[in-house]
Length: 490
Image (cartoon, rainbow, N blue to C red; front, side):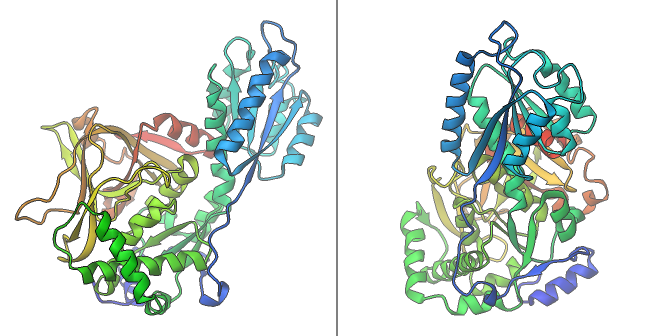
């Protein structure tokens, strides 16, 4: 691996190796774009809520009394989510639906609440709610309460089979309204997102083609200007770096190999990343030049902290994983652990995942920190990185977006988190071992046939992102709303 080459040398090497930036328009960030550091704005996005049909209060429709708790729960959801604004109205005809959609704005996805027996379809007539929504190519989540919500729920799958981006929340639990809104907001939030990048890139080629990423997801890729990392690092205040290092040292359960100077250098690198994020109003970071930066200070602590703060940060130039992390940050409000697949152990029915830039706050910025040790980087044998000890018994979901069109997924339960191997340097520092449903099936179906020729790309095949919790239903709903495929690997 190259540890001292420049960004241009890295990109040049990537071009030879077939991992250079795909053709497209990549915005370049410069210091003059934002002379005063400005964080990405706290955005609000609109969701159009259509109460579909006439409230009759009969056995196949909602009454005013039925609607009242729904409206109350929507108000609670708007407050809880924080970055969502509902535009709510009633509609039974195409004209009424069109007027409501216009009020919500062109980027607003739709939450449709079934209010009577055929409130969505009007017996499959063109002058109805759903045909009007479909004509505008909007993503839509249907909320249907069993029995009193009417009959139109059974048309959701046929509509999806026709190519419409639609999913169904069929439940008597009104909390599903908030769940639906949390996933609908992903679509407009992605359209407003900017990610800071530095090649060489890895993964499936569509994910690092700026024009393809912009067209498919709405995300803008912004390149770190040549030399800007060095310029920012040179201006980091020593006293601030030492104070930041002290926090890492004080909060660690133990310091195994790194010296205080190693941690100060890593803190300086972390503060450099903070500045680059702030001055470009950025929502995520993907860096392929990590190894070139190591002699001046390991960026791994910085990656961990950015993920903890709700800013997805992916190393190894893996744009597949960065986009995965950005989608799930918008959907779940929590960090994912990007790791190398250490292999499948059929003897233990388990899967291993490890890396050196693991987040501490896996349940979101307000969640608890996992305990950690400070270690030296296992491969380079220097610097300072975390060895994070994740929660034994925790259910986890492993996933990744590939080719901008498919979500890979499988689940497990953490059964082991190895600590400080004595007298050996094995793998990346943070490792989790998860019991899976069927290790033999996972081993045989790795990649699920979705990677195509990219299966030969080391990182496209190797990396997965782990999330606390079982998010298989969330992934299915997101896929329906975003027009993605889902492939279960095991």
